[in-house]
Image (cartoon, protein in one colour):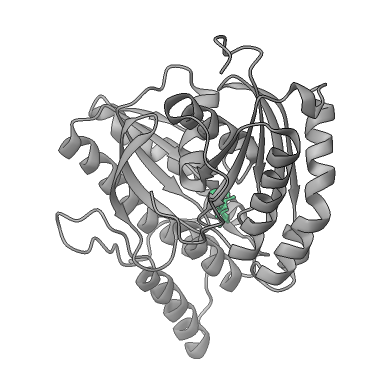
Length: 339
Ligand code: KG4
Ligand code: ZN
């Protein structure tokens, strides 16, 4: 491995769900290019990601995405020192496209390859934005597919404290957004709608066991659906903005309690939020306010690094390669890869 982090170029590939992404990074933080080809317009008409369609679209987009990432960084494959690819978790067919492509590149070029856990990628997305964020800290990964609270002990060592037992946060946002008439994926639109609403509807806060860090959001989602159906049956009018604000407040209260308690239990003074839902400014502001009172700092990635992107995979891959060296070529796509 080169001694200097500048001039060390990683080509990263991400295809775990519905974004085909390729990125070239210099060292761990320098993003030279980050191409994200979203399939959302295709999946929107089905109200969710259709796995078979996702795989097919990755096959069509991966080569152009890699070519654009290399061109955007002003380099060729010959300049690349490391190939990083998402191994899992995610949709197996989608992951296989990226893993097979990246392995093919590694074999053809003789470059080292590193398999990356998508969740570690989300966690690493904060390193790109915040050079002052360093372990140990509490990570809150809140995306369309995952909800985790973790104690990050070192760049490549973390302990999972809790996770969702049913819906992921983003999934709950998207389902509630849908019944409020917002197009998929409706998380961001729900946040906008909630800005003019009053959070005065008593939707449940599910804390499960008092000392647990796990989450459950399906009961809250059902409570919102029941509220809307009951109002419809009684012919009562519904203020959608109030429903959005009340739902959001219930979700945030649970997330904030978990994150702050994790800090207290593990003795941490920083929380790093990541994943698509970390784009939610209302959440960031509320969490920051409450954390500040306890002397805890809160970090979130730049908006363009909150959703799935290859730059975060490159950052996590580079850190893993620096600590443990390359992966052997016998790894395969793992839809259920744990942390
Ligand atoms: O991280 P991501 O792009 O994909 C996964 O790895 O799952 O997250 C996408 C999720 C979607 O559920 C989307 O509705 C949600 O993030 N999201 C938001 C906001 N922006 C995106 N949820 C709430 N508020 C937002 N502002
Ligand atoms: Zn993700």
